[in-house]
Amino acid sequence: MKKSCTVEDSHGRSLSFSADRVVVPHKKIRVRLDAAGRDIADKFAKMVRRNAQQRRGRLKYGFEEDGDAAGSLAEVVAMAALNITKWNTHPQGIGSGHKPTDIGQTIQVRSTPHPRGCHLLIYEDEVEELPDKPYVFVSVDLEEGSGVVHGWCTAHAATFMGEWKKPSKKDACFWVRQSQLIALSELDELPEDVRRELNGETDLWELAA
Image 1 (cartoon, helix red, strand yellow):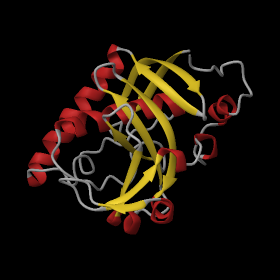
Image 2: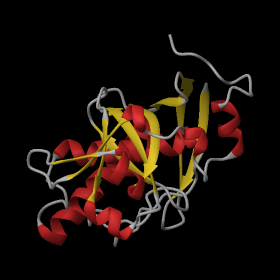
Image 3: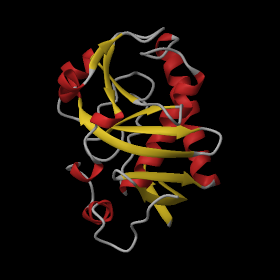
Image 4: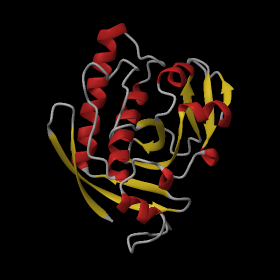
């Protein structure tokens, strides 16, 4: 289904784009952005990288070109998927690793640039600082400008749902499998119309081929 989206950034600016959006099995949502949406994500990624370099010359959890692009694309995809209209783009937060909320009132977005990426990573300081915030997991396709919103869990829940591991070139963290994530329909901040879609209560629900 084609959806027109308008989100408001931290400066009060309205950003408009369109997205193809479909509910797929296991109550996940697949989104493909139009050119305007991809451009918004690309500009935000460049701002993230610039702020990170100015702060300490590296990102908090590594310094990966794909990481900025994937994270920014994932946030735009998540807003389109979940019908969220508030986007935290405040300069004091981006690129620092300490943005208290990514989208909406409470939601953190975590991403992987690998379409089949299967783990949500939660770091120890996130458990300490933001234990009850919901972390939504999005796998993105950077070439296509699309993503799948898989599910979520809180940082605290990751401590018993996940496995403690150390990725190469990154700090040790909790790895939570996609299959362990909580369904999007259980997300407290989810708008009711999206919840009905995910629960198959509207005509907008479709099965992916």
